[in-house]
Length: 295
Image 1 (tube, rainbow, N blue to C red):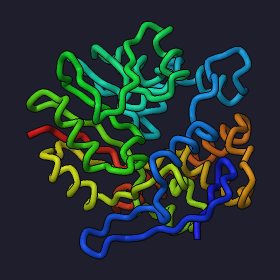
Image 2: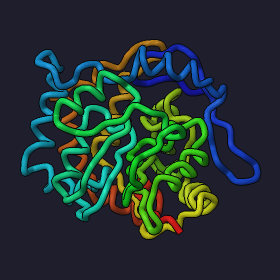
Image 3: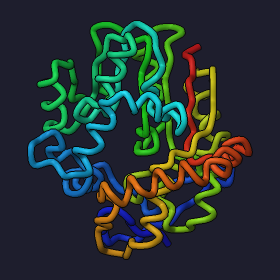
Image 4: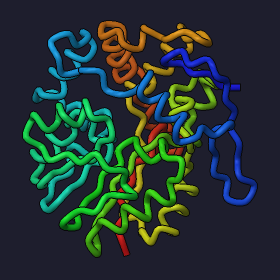
């Protein structure tokens, strides 16, 4: 049995695996209406760019807008594709308040966003970005894109295969989808058990392995250009905090402690980097990072 280690949602969940393809998903599967309520109640943007933002959010913003961010991506792993340079039209699906859009624009792309949360979308628009509030299956862009970004998004979908079909629909021929998502074969899942931070029930609906992600991309007429594995220190630190502090039915406030998180991240990256690298090399990293091309 799994429980929500972040927000204190009381409903228990289990993981079921398909006997044919090996894909895993949560049980019971929430309905679209239930997910909407859960996101609006617990998960969605709540004014992180305001003056009353928490110290955690303020520290994160300062860090990601500094020169240290590019250095950190090189040593910790770029799971959000912030360092990939290029040109052409790029759509960031689930862009939130536009943090990623800033980096993609700085890397040379003409960026737009897709964000269902109206408050977050408005904040991104105030920064000068074009952000749509359509569901991807209803989205009809005036021009197709060279890149669609699904950074920690695909695992949230009730219908990931359909999502990828719609991504293919709005991409130019030869366009790319950039995907990052938790790896169901991660060694950290084995170490932390039901405290593994990337269970993230009920918001992580589907859990992909390299094989199941490759298969769903193939069915959507994508071919993988690159696939690698990373283990961000932030994710390891979050699993440690969940193991130490998470209790069923209670929010884990320590996950938003800037001081505790920064200390753990530095200790993990400084002392455990050989172990993290070994896990990645053995195909047991915590995050799958994929660039796939539309056929």
